[in-house]
Length: 573
Image 1: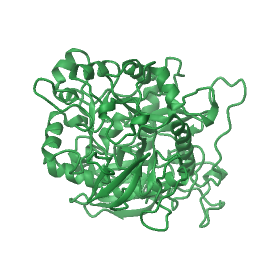
Image 2: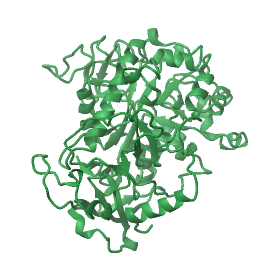
Image 3: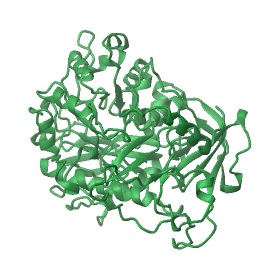
Image 4: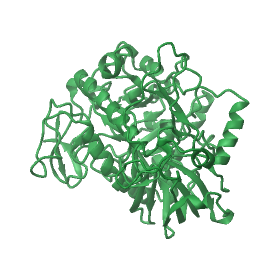
Protein backbone atom coordinates (compact mmCIF):
# COMPACT_ATOMS: atom_id res chain seq x y z
CA UNK A 1 0.00 0.00 0.00
CA UNK A 2 1.36 3.39 -0.90
CA UNK A 3 0.64 6.78 0.58
CA UNK A 4 -2.29 8.78 -0.77
CA UNK A 5 -3.20 12.21 0.44
CA UNK A 6 -6.77 13.37 0.92
CA UNK A 7 -6.22 15.96 -1.81
CA UNK A 8 -5.36 13.17 -4.27
CA UNK A 9 -8.35 11.15 -3.09
CA UNK A 10 -10.65 14.09 -3.75
CA UNK A 11 -9.39 14.45 -7.29
CA UNK A 12 -9.77 10.74 -8.03
CA UNK A 13 -13.19 10.51 -6.43
CA UNK A 14 -14.43 13.61 -8.23
CA UNK A 15 -13.25 12.31 -11.58
CA UNK A 16 -14.88 8.95 -11.04
CA UNK A 17 -18.18 10.46 -10.05
CA UNK A 18 -18.31 12.86 -13.00
CA UNK A 19 -18.45 10.00 -15.46
CA UNK A 20 -21.19 7.97 -13.88
CA UNK A 21 -24.22 8.30 -11.66
CA UNK A 22 -23.80 6.95 -8.15
CA UNK A 23 -25.90 3.97 -7.19
CA UNK A 24 -28.53 4.63 -4.58
CA UNK A 25 -27.18 1.70 -2.61
CA UNK A 26 -23.39 1.78 -2.60
CA UNK A 27 -23.33 -0.65 0.26
CA UNK A 28 -22.14 -4.23 0.03
CA UNK A 29 -23.72 -7.61 0.68
CA UNK A 30 -23.02 -9.64 3.83
CA UNK A 31 -19.50 -10.93 4.25
CA UNK A 32 -18.66 -14.24 2.62
CA UNK A 33 -15.67 -16.15 1.33
CA UNK A 34 -16.41 -15.28 -2.29
CA UNK A 35 -16.37 -11.54 -1.65
CA UNK A 36 -14.31 -11.68 1.54
CA UNK A 37 -13.34 -8.14 2.48
CA UNK A 38 -14.30 -5.59 -0.17
CA UNK A 39 -11.57 -4.07 -2.31
CA UNK A 40 -9.72 -1.10 -0.84
CA UNK A 41 -11.51 2.14 -1.53
CA UNK A 42 -11.47 5.79 -0.66
CA UNK A 43 -14.86 7.32 -0.15
CA UNK A 44 -15.99 10.83 -0.88
CA UNK A 45 -13.98 13.06 1.43
CA UNK A 46 -16.01 15.89 2.88
CA UNK A 47 -16.27 17.84 6.09
CA UNK A 48 -18.83 20.03 7.71
CA UNK A 49 -18.75 23.57 6.52
CA UNK A 50 -19.06 24.68 10.13
CA UNK A 51 -15.62 24.83 11.70
CA UNK A 52 -14.57 22.71 14.66
CA UNK A 53 -14.02 26.06 16.34
CA UNK A 54 -17.56 27.36 15.79
CA UNK A 55 -19.26 28.52 18.96
CA UNK A 56 -22.77 27.72 17.70
CA UNK A 57 -24.30 24.28 18.23
CA UNK A 58 -27.77 25.09 16.95
CA UNK A 59 -29.07 22.74 14.26
CA UNK A 60 -29.33 24.14 10.74
CA UNK A 61 -32.61 25.70 9.77
CA UNK A 62 -35.08 23.91 7.53
CA UNK A 63 -34.78 24.55 3.77
CA UNK A 64 -36.81 27.51 2.53
CA UNK A 65 -40.31 26.82 1.23
CA UNK A 66 -40.39 25.67 -2.36
CA UNK A 67 -36.81 24.42 -2.30
CA UNK A 68 -36.59 21.23 -4.34
CA UNK A 69 -33.17 20.09 -3.18
CA UNK A 70 -31.99 20.15 0.44
CA UNK A 71 -29.41 22.73 1.41
CA UNK A 72 -26.06 21.06 1.79
CA UNK A 73 -24.09 21.59 4.95
CA UNK A 74 -21.31 19.37 3.64
CA UNK A 75 -18.52 20.80 1.54
CA UNK A 76 -15.35 19.23 0.21
CA UNK A 77 -13.03 21.35 2.29
CA UNK A 78 -10.21 19.10 3.39
CA UNK A 79 -7.68 20.09 0.79
CA UNK A 80 -5.03 22.51 2.00
CA UNK A 81 -5.95 25.12 -0.58
CA UNK A 82 -9.58 25.27 0.54
CA UNK A 83 -8.58 25.83 4.17
CA UNK A 84 -5.40 27.87 3.93
CA UNK A 85 -5.77 29.69 0.65
CA UNK A 86 -7.84 32.84 0.39
CA UNK A 87 -9.41 35.00 3.05
CA UNK A 88 -10.28 33.43 6.38
CA UNK A 89 -13.90 33.31 7.37
CA UNK A 90 -15.02 33.25 10.95
CA UNK A 91 -15.46 29.50 10.72
CA UNK A 92 -11.82 29.14 9.58
CA UNK A 93 -10.32 31.03 12.50
CA UNK A 94 -8.41 29.26 15.19
CA UNK A 95 -9.90 28.52 18.59
CA UNK A 96 -8.36 30.49 21.43
CA UNK A 97 -7.51 28.98 24.81
CA UNK A 98 -11.02 29.69 26.09
CA UNK A 99 -12.85 28.54 22.95
CA UNK A 100 -13.28 32.08 21.57
CA UNK A 101 -12.53 33.02 17.98
CA UNK A 102 -9.29 34.82 17.24
CA UNK A 103 -8.27 36.56 14.00
CA UNK A 104 -5.25 34.37 13.36
CA UNK A 105 -3.93 32.77 10.19
CA UNK A 106 -6.04 29.66 9.60
CA UNK A 107 -3.71 26.67 9.89
CA UNK A 108 -4.62 23.03 10.32
CA UNK A 109 -2.97 21.42 13.32
CA UNK A 110 -2.56 17.83 12.19
CA UNK A 111 -1.36 14.92 14.31
CA UNK A 112 1.10 12.35 13.03
CA UNK A 113 1.26 8.90 14.58
CA UNK A 114 4.67 7.40 13.90
CA UNK A 115 6.35 4.05 14.49
CA UNK A 116 3.02 2.17 14.52
CA UNK A 117 1.85 -1.22 13.33
CA UNK A 118 -1.26 -0.39 11.32
CA UNK A 119 -4.14 -2.85 10.88
CA UNK A 120 -5.02 -3.66 7.26
CA UNK A 121 -8.29 -5.00 5.81
CA UNK A 122 -6.81 -8.49 5.56
CA UNK A 123 -5.81 -8.56 9.23
CA UNK A 124 -2.10 -7.98 8.71
CA UNK A 125 -0.21 -5.43 10.79
CA UNK A 126 2.22 -3.33 8.76
CA UNK A 127 4.75 -0.82 10.15
CA UNK A 128 4.15 2.77 9.16
CA UNK A 129 2.81 6.19 10.09
CA UNK A 130 -0.49 8.01 9.81
CA UNK A 131 -1.59 11.65 9.73
CA UNK A 132 -4.97 12.56 11.22
CA UNK A 133 -6.86 15.85 11.25
CA UNK A 134 -8.72 16.70 14.49
CA UNK A 135 -10.58 19.45 12.62
CA UNK A 136 -12.19 17.30 9.94
CA UNK A 137 -11.98 14.11 12.01
CA UNK A 138 -10.47 12.21 9.08
CA UNK A 139 -7.34 10.26 8.22
CA UNK A 140 -5.27 12.44 5.89
CA UNK A 141 -2.55 10.06 4.80
CA UNK A 142 -1.02 6.68 5.63
CA UNK A 143 2.55 5.66 4.95
CA UNK A 144 3.65 2.06 5.10
CA UNK A 145 7.33 1.83 5.99
CA UNK A 146 8.49 0.11 2.83
CA UNK A 147 6.83 2.83 0.74
CA UNK A 148 7.67 5.77 3.00
CA UNK A 149 7.72 9.03 1.08
CA UNK A 150 7.77 12.68 2.06
CA UNK A 151 4.35 14.00 3.10
CA UNK A 152 3.24 17.18 1.40
CA UNK A 153 1.60 18.68 4.48
CA UNK A 154 4.61 18.44 6.84
CA UNK A 155 4.27 22.14 7.66
CA UNK A 156 0.82 21.56 9.12
CA UNK A 157 1.86 18.89 11.63
CA UNK A 158 1.22 20.32 15.08
CA UNK A 159 1.79 17.16 17.10
CA UNK A 160 3.79 13.96 16.80
CA UNK A 161 2.84 10.81 18.73
CA UNK A 162 5.45 8.04 18.75
CA UNK A 163 3.57 4.76 19.01
CA UNK A 164 6.76 2.86 19.92
CA UNK A 165 5.86 -0.09 17.72
CA UNK A 166 2.40 -0.57 19.21
CA UNK A 167 -0.71 -1.60 17.24
CA UNK A 168 -3.00 1.05 15.76
CA UNK A 169 -6.42 -0.33 14.88
CA UNK A 170 -9.76 1.20 13.97
CA UNK A 171 -11.75 1.86 17.12
CA UNK A 172 -14.04 -0.93 18.28
CA UNK A 173 -17.70 -0.87 17.19
CA UNK A 174 -20.25 -2.43 19.55
CA UNK A 175 -23.59 -2.99 17.79
CA UNK A 176 -25.33 -4.42 20.89
CA UNK A 177 -24.95 -2.45 24.11
CA UNK A 178 -27.94 -2.38 26.48
CA UNK A 179 -26.24 0.09 28.81
CA UNK A 180 -23.19 0.52 31.02
CA UNK A 181 -21.82 2.42 34.01
CA UNK A 182 -25.20 2.55 35.73
CA UNK A 183 -27.20 3.68 32.68
CA UNK A 184 -29.89 1.44 31.18
CA UNK A 185 -30.93 2.40 27.66
CA UNK A 186 -34.38 0.85 28.21
CA UNK A 187 -35.14 3.04 31.24
CA UNK A 188 -38.08 5.32 30.57
CA UNK A 189 -38.61 6.10 34.26
CA UNK A 190 -41.32 3.50 34.87
CA UNK A 191 -38.90 1.08 36.53
CA UNK A 192 -36.02 1.51 38.96
CA UNK A 193 -32.84 1.48 36.93
CA UNK A 194 -30.11 4.08 36.93
CA UNK A 195 -27.42 3.71 39.58
CA UNK A 196 -24.77 6.14 38.53
CA UNK A 197 -25.70 9.23 40.61
CA UNK A 198 -26.70 7.38 43.78
CA UNK A 199 -25.20 7.89 47.21
CA UNK A 200 -23.82 4.34 47.35
CA UNK A 201 -22.35 2.04 44.75
CA UNK A 202 -25.62 0.32 43.94
CA UNK A 203 -28.22 2.97 44.79
CA UNK A 204 -31.08 3.37 42.37
CA UNK A 205 -33.08 6.08 40.68
CA UNK A 206 -36.46 6.14 39.02
CA UNK A 207 -36.03 8.94 36.50
CA UNK A 208 -35.98 8.38 32.74
CA UNK A 209 -32.52 8.48 31.24
CA UNK A 210 -31.51 11.75 29.63
CA UNK A 211 -29.01 12.77 27.01
CA UNK A 212 -26.39 13.37 29.71
CA UNK A 213 -26.68 9.71 30.73
CA UNK A 214 -26.05 8.65 27.14
CA UNK A 215 -23.07 11.02 26.93
CA UNK A 216 -21.71 9.58 30.17
CA UNK A 217 -21.67 6.09 28.65
CA UNK A 218 -20.11 7.40 25.42
CA UNK A 219 -17.33 9.13 27.34
CA UNK A 220 -16.55 6.05 29.42
CA UNK A 221 -16.64 3.54 26.57
CA UNK A 222 -13.49 4.97 24.98
CA UNK A 223 -11.57 3.55 27.96
CA UNK A 224 -12.31 0.11 26.51
CA UNK A 225 -11.36 1.07 22.94
CA UNK A 226 -14.96 1.50 21.72
CA UNK A 227 -15.38 4.48 19.39
CA UNK A 228 -18.90 3.75 18.06
CA UNK A 229 -21.89 1.92 19.53
CA UNK A 230 -25.54 1.11 18.91
CA UNK A 231 -27.59 1.85 22.04
CA UNK A 232 -29.73 -1.26 22.47
CA UNK A 233 -33.21 -1.66 23.95
CA UNK A 234 -34.62 -4.94 25.16
CA UNK A 235 -38.30 -5.79 24.61
CA UNK A 236 -40.23 -2.85 26.03
CA UNK A 237 -43.67 -1.29 26.14
CA UNK A 238 -44.97 0.92 23.35
CA UNK A 239 -44.71 3.86 25.76
CA UNK A 240 -41.03 3.15 26.38
CA UNK A 241 -40.16 3.07 22.68
CA UNK A 242 -41.96 6.39 22.16
CA UNK A 243 -39.86 7.89 24.95
CA UNK A 244 -36.42 6.44 24.23
CA UNK A 245 -36.15 6.55 20.42
CA UNK A 246 -36.60 10.34 20.12
CA UNK A 247 -34.32 10.83 23.13
CA UNK A 248 -31.53 8.84 21.48
CA UNK A 249 -31.98 10.82 18.27
CA UNK A 250 -31.60 14.03 20.27
CA UNK A 251 -28.45 12.72 21.94
CA UNK A 252 -27.00 11.66 18.58
CA UNK A 253 -27.76 15.02 16.97
CA UNK A 254 -26.32 16.96 19.91
CA UNK A 255 -23.17 14.87 19.83
CA UNK A 256 -22.70 15.37 16.09
CA UNK A 257 -23.14 19.12 16.49
CA UNK A 258 -20.55 19.17 19.27
CA UNK A 259 -18.11 17.04 17.28
CA UNK A 260 -18.11 19.68 14.55
CA UNK A 261 -18.08 22.73 16.79
CA UNK A 262 -15.63 22.08 19.62
CA UNK A 263 -11.90 22.66 19.83
CA UNK A 264 -9.43 19.79 19.75
CA UNK A 265 -9.19 19.67 23.52
CA UNK A 266 -12.93 18.97 23.90
CA UNK A 267 -14.08 15.34 24.00
CA UNK A 268 -17.54 13.92 23.33
CA UNK A 269 -16.81 10.19 23.61
CA UNK A 270 -17.72 7.26 21.38
CA UNK A 271 -20.02 7.92 18.41
CA UNK A 272 -23.70 7.25 19.11
CA UNK A 273 -25.03 5.25 16.16
CA UNK A 274 -28.60 4.25 15.37
CA UNK A 275 -30.43 2.05 17.83
CA UNK A 276 -30.51 -1.73 18.01
CA UNK A 277 -34.02 -2.79 19.00
CA UNK A 278 -33.69 -6.30 20.40
CA UNK A 279 -37.33 -7.31 20.45
CA UNK A 280 -40.19 -7.37 21.14
CA UNK A 281 -41.00 -9.70 18.19
CA UNK A 282 -39.69 -12.88 19.83
CA UNK A 283 -40.68 -16.49 20.34
CA UNK A 284 -42.05 -16.48 23.91
CA UNK A 285 -40.12 -19.65 24.72
CA UNK A 286 -36.87 -17.91 23.79
CA UNK A 287 -37.48 -14.65 25.65
CA UNK A 288 -34.41 -15.01 27.86
CA UNK A 289 -34.19 -12.03 30.22
CA UNK A 290 -36.92 -10.10 28.38
CA UNK A 291 -40.21 -9.32 30.10
CA UNK A 292 -42.81 -11.73 28.67
CA UNK A 293 -45.50 -9.05 29.00
CA UNK A 294 -43.79 -7.07 26.24
CA UNK A 295 -43.21 -9.92 23.76
CA UNK A 296 -45.57 -9.85 20.76
CA UNK A 297 -45.81 -11.13 17.18
CA UNK A 298 -45.75 -8.75 14.18
CA UNK A 299 -49.07 -10.10 12.93
CA UNK A 300 -49.61 -7.22 10.49
CA UNK A 301 -46.02 -7.10 9.26
CA UNK A 302 -44.65 -3.59 8.86
CA UNK A 303 -47.83 -2.06 10.28
CA UNK A 304 -47.18 -3.89 13.56
CA UNK A 305 -43.60 -2.63 13.61
CA UNK A 306 -44.73 0.97 13.17
CA UNK A 307 -47.45 0.62 15.80
CA UNK A 308 -45.20 -0.91 18.46
CA UNK A 309 -42.29 1.48 17.96
CA UNK A 310 -44.47 4.53 17.40
CA UNK A 311 -43.14 5.20 13.91
CA UNK A 312 -44.92 8.17 12.35
CA UNK A 313 -43.37 9.96 9.39
CA UNK A 314 -45.78 12.86 9.73
CA UNK A 315 -45.52 13.49 13.46
CA UNK A 316 -42.32 15.58 13.44
CA UNK A 317 -39.25 15.43 15.63
CA UNK A 318 -41.09 14.20 18.73
CA UNK A 319 -42.01 10.85 17.18
CA UNK A 320 -39.93 7.77 16.50
CA UNK A 321 -38.59 7.43 12.96
CA UNK A 322 -37.11 4.52 11.04
CA UNK A 323 -33.95 6.58 10.60
CA UNK A 324 -33.43 6.28 14.37
CA UNK A 325 -32.94 2.53 14.03
CA UNK A 326 -29.93 0.62 12.68
CA UNK A 327 -30.76 -2.97 13.75
CA UNK A 328 -33.91 -4.89 14.69
CA UNK A 329 -33.69 -8.40 16.13
CA UNK A 330 -36.76 -10.57 15.59
CA UNK A 331 -37.83 -14.21 15.34
CA UNK A 332 -38.36 -14.90 11.62
CA UNK A 333 -40.79 -17.77 12.13
CA UNK A 334 -43.45 -15.54 13.71
CA UNK A 335 -46.57 -14.60 11.71
CA UNK A 336 -45.86 -11.41 9.77
CA UNK A 337 -42.09 -11.47 10.50
CA UNK A 338 -41.00 -12.16 6.92
CA UNK A 339 -43.20 -9.38 5.55
CA UNK A 340 -41.77 -7.01 8.16
CA UNK A 341 -38.22 -8.10 7.29
CA UNK A 342 -38.74 -7.43 3.60
CA UNK A 343 -40.23 -4.00 4.27
CA UNK A 344 -37.50 -2.99 6.71
CA UNK A 345 -34.62 -4.00 4.46
CA UNK A 346 -35.87 -2.84 1.07
CA UNK A 347 -34.69 0.47 -0.36
CA UNK A 348 -37.09 3.33 -0.90
CA UNK A 349 -37.15 4.07 -4.67
CA UNK A 350 -38.36 7.61 -3.97
CA UNK A 351 -35.11 8.53 -2.19
CA UNK A 352 -33.23 11.36 -3.96
CA UNK A 353 -30.27 10.11 -5.96
CA UNK A 354 -27.77 12.17 -4.00
CA UNK A 355 -28.30 10.25 -0.75
CA UNK A 356 -28.20 6.59 0.30
CA UNK A 357 -31.64 5.23 1.20
CA UNK A 358 -31.94 4.14 4.81
CA UNK A 359 -32.59 0.46 5.37
CA UNK A 360 -32.54 -1.41 8.64
CA UNK A 361 -30.42 -4.46 9.40
CA UNK A 362 -32.77 -7.29 10.37
CA UNK A 363 -31.20 -9.91 12.61
CA UNK A 364 -32.62 -13.29 13.60
CA UNK A 365 -32.64 -13.93 17.33
CA UNK A 366 -34.63 -15.08 20.36
CA UNK A 367 -36.15 -17.57 18.02
CA UNK A 368 -37.28 -21.16 17.48
CA UNK A 369 -36.45 -20.88 13.78
CA UNK A 370 -35.44 -23.97 11.89
CA UNK A 371 -32.73 -24.05 9.25
CA UNK A 372 -35.44 -23.64 6.61
CA UNK A 373 -36.88 -20.64 8.48
CA UNK A 374 -33.42 -19.11 8.44
CA UNK A 375 -33.08 -19.54 4.68
CA UNK A 376 -36.46 -17.84 4.22
CA UNK A 377 -35.33 -14.97 6.45
CA UNK A 378 -32.19 -14.49 4.34
CA UNK A 379 -34.25 -14.51 1.15
CA UNK A 380 -36.40 -11.71 2.62
CA UNK A 381 -33.41 -9.54 3.53
CA UNK A 382 -32.11 -10.63 6.96
CA UNK A 383 -28.30 -10.43 7.16
CA UNK A 384 -27.38 -11.10 10.81
CA UNK A 385 -27.81 -13.64 13.63
CA UNK A 386 -28.00 -12.14 17.12
CA UNK A 387 -25.71 -13.56 19.84
CA UNK A 388 -25.16 -16.93 18.15
CA UNK A 389 -26.08 -20.06 20.16
CA UNK A 390 -27.97 -18.05 22.80
CA UNK A 391 -31.80 -17.89 22.69
CA UNK A 392 -32.02 -20.11 19.58
CA UNK A 393 -32.30 -23.80 18.81
CA UNK A 394 -29.00 -25.67 19.26
CA UNK A 395 -27.16 -27.27 16.36
CA UNK A 396 -28.13 -30.88 15.68
CA UNK A 397 -26.78 -33.03 12.89
CA UNK A 398 -30.30 -33.55 11.47
CA UNK A 399 -31.76 -30.22 12.60
CA UNK A 400 -28.95 -27.69 12.29
CA UNK A 401 -31.10 -24.64 13.04
CA UNK A 402 -29.76 -21.15 12.36
CA UNK A 403 -26.24 -22.24 13.31
CA UNK A 404 -26.21 -24.42 10.20
CA UNK A 405 -26.38 -21.34 7.97
CA UNK A 406 -22.74 -20.55 8.77
CA UNK A 407 -21.48 -23.58 6.85
CA UNK A 408 -23.97 -23.34 3.97
CA UNK A 409 -21.99 -21.26 1.51
CA UNK A 410 -22.53 -23.65 -1.39
CA UNK A 411 -26.28 -24.16 -0.92
CA UNK A 412 -27.01 -20.50 -0.27
CA UNK A 413 -24.83 -19.52 -3.22
CA UNK A 414 -26.90 -21.65 -5.56
CA UNK A 415 -29.94 -19.74 -4.30
CA UNK A 416 -28.30 -16.39 -4.90
CA UNK A 417 -27.95 -15.75 -1.15
CA UNK A 418 -25.04 -14.96 1.13
CA UNK A 419 -24.28 -16.44 4.52
CA UNK A 420 -25.29 -14.09 7.33
CA UNK A 421 -23.06 -12.24 9.70
CA UNK A 422 -23.31 -13.56 13.25
CA UNK A 423 -22.61 -11.87 16.55
CA UNK A 424 -21.14 -13.60 19.61
CA UNK A 425 -20.75 -12.61 23.25
CA UNK A 426 -17.25 -13.87 24.03
CA UNK A 427 -17.13 -13.34 27.78
CA UNK A 428 -16.27 -16.88 28.85
CA UNK A 429 -19.86 -17.32 30.09
CA UNK A 430 -22.32 -17.12 27.21
CA UNK A 431 -20.48 -19.40 24.77
CA UNK A 432 -17.95 -22.16 25.42
CA UNK A 433 -14.58 -21.50 23.83
CA UNK A 434 -14.85 -24.59 21.59
CA UNK A 435 -18.17 -23.31 20.22
CA UNK A 436 -16.61 -19.87 19.64
CA UNK A 437 -13.81 -21.48 17.65
CA UNK A 438 -16.18 -23.73 15.67
CA UNK A 439 -18.36 -20.81 14.56
CA UNK A 440 -15.39 -18.65 13.63
CA UNK A 441 -13.71 -21.40 11.62
CA UNK A 442 -16.99 -22.01 9.77
CA UNK A 443 -17.36 -18.40 8.67
CA UNK A 444 -14.49 -16.12 9.75
CA UNK A 445 -15.53 -13.19 7.54
CA UNK A 446 -18.96 -13.07 9.19
CA UNK A 447 -17.93 -13.00 12.85
CA UNK A 448 -18.92 -9.90 14.85
CA UNK A 449 -18.04 -9.43 18.52
CA UNK A 450 -20.65 -7.77 20.74
CA UNK A 451 -20.76 -7.22 24.49
CA UNK A 452 -24.55 -7.31 25.02
CA UNK A 453 -23.56 -5.44 28.18
CA UNK A 454 -26.16 -4.10 30.59
CA UNK A 455 -26.16 -1.21 33.06
CA UNK A 456 -24.02 -3.10 35.59
CA UNK A 457 -20.98 -3.04 33.31
CA UNK A 458 -18.26 -1.18 35.17
CA UNK A 459 -20.06 -1.29 38.54
CA UNK A 460 -19.11 -4.70 39.93
CA UNK A 461 -21.22 -7.31 41.69
CA UNK A 462 -24.60 -6.44 43.19
CA UNK A 463 -28.29 -6.04 42.38
CA UNK A 464 -29.15 -4.15 39.20
CA UNK A 465 -31.90 -3.80 36.58
CA UNK A 466 -32.29 -4.58 32.89
CA UNK A 467 -35.42 -2.84 31.69
CA UNK A 468 -38.11 -3.87 34.16
CA UNK A 469 -36.27 -7.03 35.21
CA UNK A 470 -34.19 -7.39 38.39
CA UNK A 471 -30.69 -8.70 37.74
CA UNK A 472 -28.08 -10.13 40.10
CA UNK A 473 -24.42 -9.82 39.14
CA UNK A 474 -21.97 -12.14 40.88
CA UNK A 475 -18.47 -12.98 39.73
CA UNK A 476 -19.04 -11.23 36.40
CA UNK A 477 -22.14 -13.34 35.67
CA UNK A 478 -25.44 -11.46 35.25
CA UNK A 479 -28.64 -13.46 35.82
CA UNK A 480 -32.29 -12.69 36.42
CA UNK A 481 -32.80 -12.49 40.17
CA UNK A 482 -33.59 -15.90 41.64
CA UNK A 483 -32.87 -17.79 38.39
CA UNK A 484 -29.98 -19.08 36.31
CA UNK A 485 -31.18 -17.21 33.19
CA UNK A 486 -28.42 -15.06 31.75
CA UNK A 487 -29.35 -11.38 31.57
CA UNK A 488 -26.83 -9.84 29.21
CA UNK A 489 -23.23 -9.43 30.22
CA UNK A 490 -20.97 -7.05 32.11
CA UNK A 491 -17.98 -7.61 29.84
CA UNK A 492 -16.13 -4.85 27.97
CA UNK A 493 -15.22 -5.03 24.30
CA UNK A 494 -11.46 -5.10 24.86
CA UNK A 495 -11.91 -8.18 27.06
CA UNK A 496 -14.05 -9.84 24.36
CA UNK A 497 -11.28 -9.30 21.81
CA UNK A 498 -8.65 -10.76 24.14
CA UNK A 499 -10.72 -13.86 24.93
CA UNK A 500 -11.68 -14.34 21.29
CA UNK A 501 -8.05 -14.31 20.17
CA UNK A 502 -7.18 -16.74 22.95
CA UNK A 503 -10.05 -19.15 22.20
CA UNK A 504 -9.66 -19.27 18.41
CA UNK A 505 -5.89 -19.00 18.08
CA UNK A 506 -6.39 -16.52 15.25
CA UNK A 507 -3.92 -13.70 14.69
CA UNK A 508 -4.20 -10.44 16.60
CA UNK A 509 -5.25 -8.66 13.42
CA UNK A 510 -7.94 -11.23 12.63
CA UNK A 511 -9.39 -10.81 16.12
CA UNK A 512 -9.42 -7.04 15.73
CA UNK A 513 -11.36 -7.28 12.45
CA UNK A 514 -14.24 -8.93 14.34
CA UNK A 515 -14.64 -5.78 16.47
CA UNK A 516 -13.93 -3.23 13.72
CA UNK A 517 -14.40 -3.94 10.00
CA UNK A 518 -16.99 -6.68 10.39
CA UNK A 519 -19.50 -4.71 12.50
CA UNK A 520 -18.95 -1.73 10.19
CA UNK A 521 -19.87 -3.97 7.25
CA UNK A 522 -23.02 -5.14 9.05
CA UNK A 523 -24.12 -1.50 9.32
CA UNK A 524 -22.84 -0.65 5.80
CA UNK A 525 -20.63 1.99 7.43
CA UNK A 526 -17.32 0.77 5.94
CA UNK A 527 -18.08 2.98 2.91
CA UNK A 528 -19.02 6.63 2.59
CA UNK A 529 -22.69 7.27 3.30
CA UNK A 530 -24.83 10.24 2.28
CA UNK A 531 -27.93 10.75 4.41
CA UNK A 532 -30.54 13.32 5.29
CA UNK A 533 -30.38 14.98 8.69
CA UNK A 534 -32.59 17.87 9.73
CA UNK A 535 -33.21 19.01 6.17
CA UNK A 536 -29.58 18.78 5.03
CA UNK A 537 -27.35 16.22 3.38
CA UNK A 538 -24.71 14.83 5.70
CA UNK A 539 -21.72 12.79 4.53
CA UNK A 540 -20.61 10.10 6.96
CA UNK A 541 -17.02 9.00 6.45
CA UNK A 542 -16.30 5.26 6.65
CA UNK A 543 -15.62 3.69 10.04
CA UNK A 544 -14.03 0.36 10.94
CA UNK A 545 -11.13 0.84 8.52
CA UNK A 546 -7.85 2.77 8.47
CA UNK A 547 -7.63 4.35 5.04
CA UNK A 548 -7.31 7.83 3.61
CA UNK A 549 -10.62 9.65 3.98
CA UNK A 550 -12.03 7.34 6.63
CA UNK A 551 -12.93 8.60 10.09
CA UNK A 552 -9.96 8.94 12.44
CA UNK A 553 -11.46 6.68 15.12
CA UNK A 554 -8.48 4.75 16.42
CA UNK A 555 -7.35 2.58 19.30
CA UNK A 556 -3.74 1.85 20.22
CA UNK A 557 -3.00 -1.54 21.79
CA UNK A 558 -0.04 -3.64 22.83
CA UNK A 559 0.49 -7.30 21.93
CA UNK A 560 -1.60 -8.32 24.95
CA UNK A 561 -4.46 -6.26 23.46
CA UNK A 562 -4.50 -3.81 26.36
CA UNK A 563 -5.95 -0.43 25.36
CA UNK A 564 -3.20 2.21 25.51
CA UNK A 565 -5.01 5.13 23.87
CA UNK A 566 -8.16 6.01 21.93
CA UNK A 567 -8.91 8.71 19.36
CA UNK A 568 -12.40 9.71 18.19
CA UNK A 569 -12.57 11.95 15.14
CA UNK A 570 -8.83 12.56 15.36
CA UNK A 571 -9.03 13.79 18.97
CA UNK A 572 -7.25 11.79 21.66
CA UNK A 573 -9.59 10.82 24.47
